[in-house]
Length: 174
Length: 418
Image 1 (spheres, helix red, strand yellow):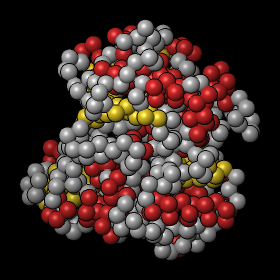
Image 2 (cartoon, helix red, strand yellow):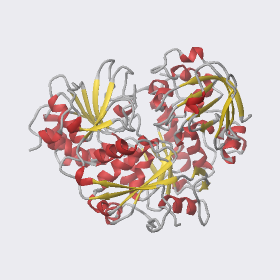
Image 3 (tube, helix red, strand yellow):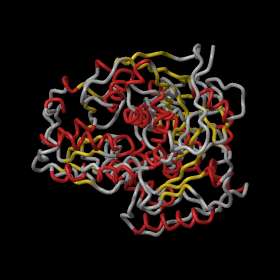
Image 4 (cartoon, one colour):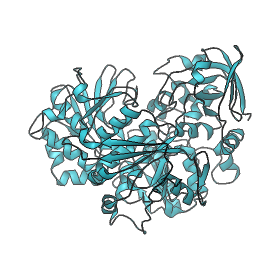
């Protein structure tokens, strides 16, 4: 998958935590319904408005908190990438391991108003506001992480190399 | 310039002479710990065909035990089959269970100088033992279990130097809140703890501080190894210890001083941890509570239960307040029973539950209703974390929580001490 993503921006503040993205209520839902809970506590109705390829722009400490696989649910919502002033290290891992690019870009919140269009080159670290013609440059993703995103994450690799079964096992429904 | 502890451990685990900030270290783990929840949540568990080393893979049931739903029960059936298939010697089923970070500590799975992988964010708990450990998430843990490979960005490190000794009724949670208040988030930074005051800081407080480092988004946390570490691990580990210390000229981003003697209890406000707390002497609001909770990987240790019991002994929990105490493991539960702590807490009107992650993550055993207020000695205060998104979660050390349970409002434990 390409490391350049273009889309409409949703702007979030500081300290957006994992539980807002993947709540414990979602733990109990069937896989295809889990993403309906994303941001339900802080932005109810967001899942109905987000469109394929949209970009999340956030403040400091995006994805702070738990080990929940937030990238999986953001991808299910159609999100094309995440850029924040700072991205929590575990959140970054839980995005790129599912093929969802995420990048720490200090100052990115000053570049966008919600609804503007962005082009993000996650490899080069170039972040452009296509509506205003402004941009910033930051350090891009490391090569190893670029490879993960390009190959769609870790799971396809573990399947193709024969380490795990192809289909996830689904626990019994309640 | 020399190397920090984390740099040395990541260098060894990745087979290199040295790693530097900005590098990606591709490491072989010394221990991988998997959990019940990853078997239960749909879409995360792919059955494994091989393990890199069954003796270095553990399975702990902790988040939802005994099973509160059919889905949880079914996940654990899968887990038992997995443990049997690969002959795991470190499998902690219901009865041997506990919160994984407590079980890891009690059973010596986190060893000085080694690298431990676990999906849960509070895996940094193991850093109290001079072990490099941080949350890895579900997918990277699958990779670590099978291929025996895990990657880490190498970050810069901030060194914290402790001085002095904690005053009465002030504990590790308060030390951590002080650090989170003074220095805020630590995204893309690791934290190293030592200094002359470390000798005065008991292992229980180190374990709380280490666990909470997830809440300031630290990459890695790590404590110096000393006699206290050696004493805790004595009899728990099955191979020679290889503790790691930093070079005297290690290259730190910053070195910061923490004067333990000057600290007091803290109260953390709801919704986030960095820069969001106050020393209790400056906390002027009267906050009425519906629930008080002592438990979790951060504060479900026997020492935490002793503090809670000492505060409530011979007193009564305030009318209308639920005081829930959750031991961190079966071993903690048994020890609390032997010491009469469960009796003391129960006589005071508290509820002592089975050991599990439970109320800390709002899944079972003490979920909050809309509009309710809780003060908790657990790990997180996020909106919706412990139940309804319309509930408020304050945080404090176990002494503060127990004192608040008695008063019905958030209370300084020093006003109740005998």
